[in-house]
Length: 149
Image (cartoon, rainbow, N blue to C red; front, top):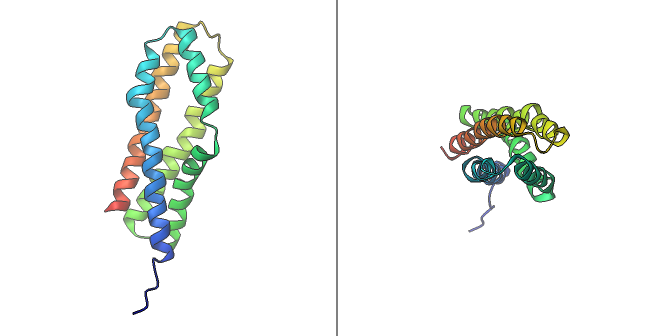
């Protein structure tokens, strides 16, 4: 008996589930533990820690999952355009990728430019960044669920 192995659709599907799940996990971990921990710090310490985290996350491993989930989702939607696959692709592209570029990155840039001792800037940042990050986490979880179903 000759087996042909997994199809391209199966491989892409698996990779999108994996990258999307990992990406959602990163977002969830930040919203559930990292940000609440940083929120407890004085502004100067919290801002310094967040600046360091923002710099550290710009690495190949994170970029692979950050771009892999939405690009893989788009590829999968082209290869196997079912309603759940299209939903997953939209959830990876719009809330995850676009929110990052339009909301979270500008908040990070504003934090970089802010006075590190400004408690109001820090409180505003933590509240808003965490809110939109949680939206990204929920979107990735929804996308992963759609692909599993």
